[in-house]
Length: 372
Image (cartoon, rainbow, N blue to C red; front, side, top):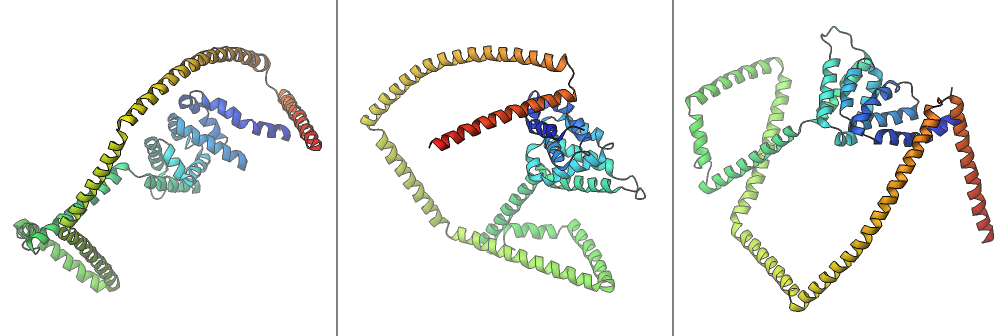
């Protein structure tokens, strides 16, 4: 068992170690961390579990191969996978904006197929049922961009069609005299349409008689809903017709107001442009631009020389730091194995260093306070 003080020190440097481990080739290297994090998830404390779930989610966000690894490990590590699913579900608004939606949805569909029992007699465990609920809920929530576009297109078509029909009725005075009314009347008189409507009416009457005989309360409830919907649609049609009629009756006045506004905006823009193009201001602008270009040239020459020097010094420092780090890793980690005693020694050394610096800064601040 690791000493409590060592555990505290290791937890403090965990984020730093994770930053070094995840930063290099994150789109390819995170797949090597994902299985270990998922396996150890069940045996973590509450604080460690939160950290592990955050790292697992980061692996899924940056490395698409982790989704396939999760599919392969799901059955063997069901409890841990349910915990990860619950974490994703609880942070849905953040996760859905950052993950690969295609890989995410493909994984959810795979999990649903895996968790769905082959027959009704198959006994389903509680964690399987919970995982199936979470996957189904997230599949429904993630939706499809195509469905949203189709809904928008359908709404635009309905609005345009309604506006055209209202304009058509307004132009001819009535629905029967309008072009839409004539098309509708001709369609209703067609032989096939008459036959289909007769068949539908016959089946509707049969269902109505059967419903009124066996479930009259349900039929009355359905009639009430239909009447409510029809009255709402009628009110909406009146609202649309009123606004369209207003636009049609006042179209000339609206067009004149829009024209006047456009002319006024054009005149204001022309006046502003004219005030800016006087000979004095053009001369001032040319002089200012030339001075600015000269200053830019001077500062660029100065900055480029400093940048070259800084790049040279930085490259030399990086090479020296890399050599020192490589030598340190070889001496302390490769030549000698990392043991518990060495970890304790490092932890105590770090604690002593922090303690000495804390005492030094405390005495400095105390002396400065007493002096004042």
